[in-house]
Length: 293
Length: 248
Image (spheres, one colour):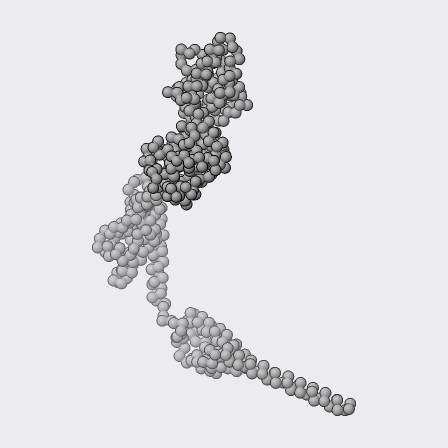
């Protein structure tokens, strides 16, 4: 872009009006010392927005470049080799054998933290081994830095790997314990295994015999469920027995409509009473008038 | 090459120098008013700030004029260049002395490409004389525009930005300048001859009205003797195609 010339036509503090060589008058901001009649040479300046955009673009590209540059490699058993960047994120994944490739096909670890990636792979390995009724071994994990100066990073990575392994171990224990203790429990259709009690009977009788519900005392979790059920029933009982009448389960759903109807009837009867009183008063007034006459 | 302004001021100075050395000690009074703007401009350029008639630097410039009349040798070059150099040297000496009493750095004087330590070339003073001539033109233009209630600030607002609209406006300017009737109407009535332009030249009334102040200014610059400013507004001076001014 060619720098344009002009003549200074008028000046002020921090500004000047220039007659440019294309005949256009322009007001410019300037801190230079300009005097009227002086020739002005337009300085070529990149717009600030261009500079800002270039800086942002450069920063982004450098960050991206740095993000994808591998600082250390983490070897997970003989399965896979994970390339880790300076922020501890997995940026490259390479399977060492067929088993590793299979796991990596099923588990997405890219861009995860090393801790999460190790946990994912290890958990998946455990599951795989359990399915195949194999013994579960702790995987051998090592960190290899491309540069010997990166010892601190390696230590950091090893710590993260340990954390990941602990998480995976926890998950494994949880899975095992669940397998032993879990039973098919559903909130909608509770199975109390207390064969003699029918919950619908309790509702219909309107009298709750808690002793009859004392079932499965040895099973703590079942006992809790029982307690919760009692609380539930008590609440419902309170609502239903407001008008001293026990309603069947179906009617409970329409309780509000029932209640409204009940209230309305009462109000009508009250209004009728008022009318009667007025009539009595009128009669008394008539008698008094007759006597006076 | 000297402009008419430069030549006259330079020849006047030479004449005064002759009179001074012939014993007329008051010959300086004849040229003082003409010389002072030049002296003040040199002082301003040297200091990098505006120097008024009441500043210390202006007094130094006055003393430099007397020094020039006493020491100048016509065989060694132009009297104005010698005067300019003397003013610069004296101001720099003054600033150096002042520096001893204050912490003001001398480097602040090195603006506009001129250095305190080295001598400036002759063109530096020639440029100053050109600047002075241009500023006189601008002052004259400003006073004429005042009659039309036009200020430079307004011209910034109404300048045609697009090349195409600028070309269309230049066509209108050329029409008015070329036609004596239209130009005399403009100068007398202080308004554009819209009706005539529209009927005779098929000028777009909306365009002419929008850039009215710009057109008037450009016509005034062309009609009056403003050689420096004319070069900035004439299309041929900028190498652009001159618009046809033939009647439609």
